[in-house]
Length: 113
Image (cartoon, rainbow, N blue to C red; front, side, top):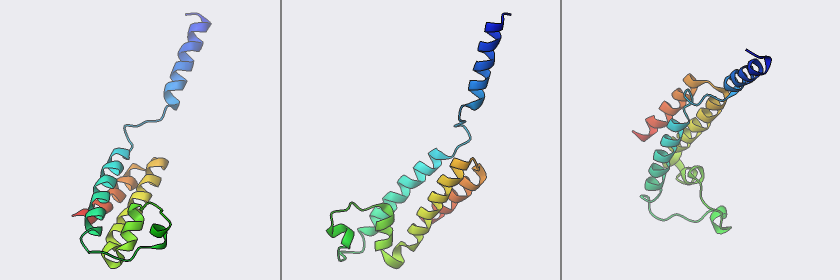
């Protein structure tokens, strides 16, 4: 085998070793739980009747799942906790801690039940 072929094989192996591994991430679980949580928040927000508009709404800012959950007051406490769990799951996923990520997803899903 020539030295050029050895260099190419070495470069290929090194390139494959540095590629991010997606099989162990829990990004799909985070996305699925976020979608379910968004639907639950919207459903809950519409079930309590009209409330006064916040300053953000008056300034034409678009609502976020977190702002909707906070606007619900005591009714949205579980939702804000679940959103915080999903934020921690994203952090754990970025750092490669699959166990912590799955634990945070499970805590977020517990609110949905």
